[in-house]
Image (cartoon, rainbow, N blue to C red; front, side, top):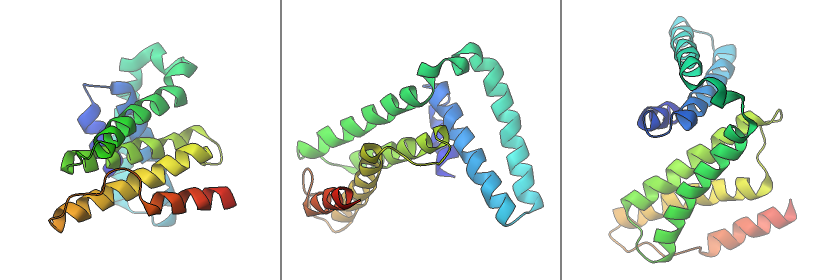
Length: 166
């Protein structure tokens, strides 16, 4: 669902990233349908596949260019991440910053569809985990009425240590 929500939000702004969000949603939907088939799930998947076909016609040759695949989505996700990270490190974190970190995690996650094993490069996996953690951390701080801690905290050091051990 978050992939489709972001696809809808991006529709006019960046139809290419929106397309890849829908593709990843279909990939996840097919897996879920195999595990627990339902007529409702099948209907949703069929509607999504129809939408993807329409998107393919609209995007045309752009989908055939390698630069418009993983590198394009990586760049897009990185820009969203960098914007949120800059706000956070400047001590200006807000709900919008948390939403940006969360969006970055969604866009980083859709990169899994470009690899046969569904894995991310270690650096991207670390950014994904950090973006999710920062989104939750900022939201928690704001709910508790305190100013979010700027920049990386001990949790990032723990993530880096986990990466080094892997």
